[in-house]
Image 1 (cartoon, rainbow, N blue to C red):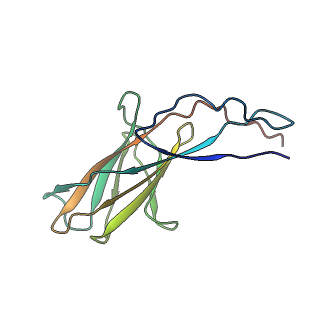
Image 2: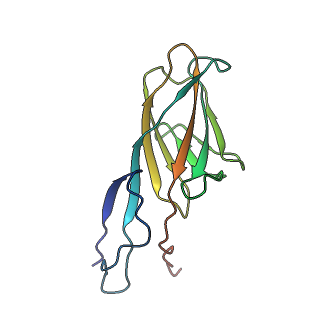
Length: 138
């Protein structure tokens, strides 16, 4: 029987490496990290209300991370461009919750309030996951 461990970390806690000592009878497992953050959405008068534009970046060196999945609900999401940029149209001017996923990085769940009189811009930072991707025989 395998044990799975879920950790909730803030982006201020930047632990690196796999969790030592978490083992199953078959193979060692790494902890699954989900970072949680409150992010700044900066008003941008060049964007109409309800538009959220942003960039997905690496925590380590702030380089853009392309092709991350960025979601505002289970049904509404986009794949970031090669330069890490993404855009949502038609969001409410209420609190928006964004989930970002990319293989090799910890998932990020971020929330903030959208500007009411214009669109907004943000940067979302992902922390690298040093754990190997498990091999599943076919």
